[in-house]
Image (tube, rainbow, N blue to C red):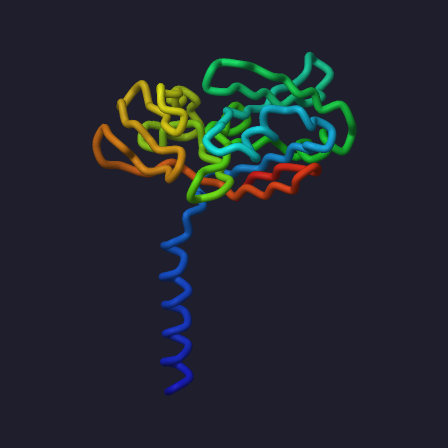
Length: 188
């Protein structure tokens, strides 16, 4: 009997712990960027500077099929990083998964004051359904905030929480692993 009670308590504890997981598992996210081959990228600056977030998306170079990483900062500066070697491209051969937007999605990545390095889905979690890219979050005048043009909610890039515009879901968060001088990996 004691074993059954102990097993029940253990299982309940594991299930309760899952509810506190801040990482979104609703949509697949899988991104790898080798900073060793792109050391001047705005992604590196976002990983090493506080509240310097950038929007990251994937594209394909021409009809040949090599990938590129597109980056835009809140001031509208753009950068295209062509993935020119086999190792960079191999990671995406099984598919590009950029969260709620799927292959056409984008991520907001940067370093916060309190949560360290973060990656948020760049689509509104309260408006987006089934891989629609219609609800892109837009930068506000505050470098640590984004807004949905549809529902008008404003989100904090520091915490992912809604700052104004009504109750709802917080931003979708993904795991960031940054190895200086080597790579940035984002996923769930």
